[in-house]
Image (cartoon, rainbow, N blue to C red; front, top):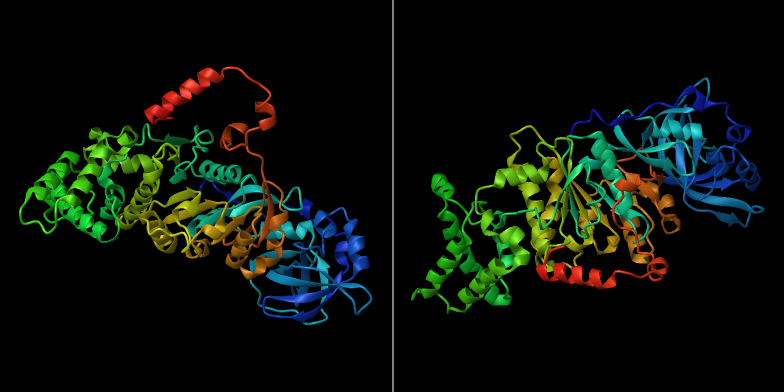
Length: 555
């Protein structure tokens, strides 16, 4: 991915580093004990009250849960996040807090401010060390301390002017997950992040699997929209496992019999193509075109042989399903007779945006795909991304970002797993994709229904409000130790606010997302019952048009 368009993080300007207030220069607490990842602090309630009146919002929030404080260690400042608060009954009503260490920065000798901030801790404080508020100037230096390419997505809470950036290479290079309950602004936030990426990298390669048809409106100007009317995905691109999901209806021992028959007949059908003759020996998985009529005739011939190992029932089952797929108009986007030609290179170039020509994102709208084959269609598209990256290693690397909306549908946890091919390929991309230049973005409102191994592979987690206890616990288990103080605020986040932690940010942060222009928003707004139920007109025509589309199987 070209990085020329991405922003470079800028150091804070001198005007940002205005004179430190009296509150910021005075300690607010003292270290009581120290452990490897955090410590316990005793705060002075009077000092916290004094700080709460400060004009600097960062100083005003000092000591509160989720706020940052700093501790001097030699010539460095150690930054920590406040995890909790409780009253100290033994020492006259003081406040005890557990804090998590985030990282450290060097001290500027003249001003005492922080610079060259880095994650991790090399020098620990000792019990009795003084604790100071972290100012907005400090935080601005911390968030702007890295020169890596980034995209700006909002403001760091509680400030109004410190921009929150995501390091692009780290975000995409190690996968990311966007989590949030329905109604928290998840789709709009996903659109915002993808718009920022596309605006900064007009020659990028992004594929978004859209199960509800929400994103078509958002990316009409800088992407291509592919649905059942224009996707034209050739059926012969499927490998054998995907053919089995599409063609086999039996289970148990019968399914194995049917699979053996399909494997033998499919290999014969592929072998009839001139490409197969040029290549010599081929496998049943090879993406070589074949005619559905050839497969049907081969099944018929095999069924008529006297030396076949089984009766005719397995052949009849497979042939009946094949005839059904050929005749059903809902499947024409995949099983049309027009898709027999060798269009693999053109199809991949169209889907992967090679070249992008200023439209770097493909929206694959699968809302019109029959529900029984949706997961297979997503499996084919995902596997094409992976196989293309594997076989293209000798070429100049073209990283591809694959974004999966409603990811828990496709990579469910063990309890809900059905052994489908889409779960296997997305799990493989999560584990191995970054070696081949594939980035995976998972968007879901039910992280607890997502495969745990897949979420743990996501280097950056963007969590919006989660209302379910199981989801909250699941995300807390997946997040790094230093973000625990932030995680407690997940149920209290407002709409379009999030907690971001992991590789994509310098330290865990709480972010208020930017507003997105109307024409860039997905069509995911909830209907207004009070408004729509108080007006009337045109219902008969609306019902008629809907029934027509329903019968035609189109949208």
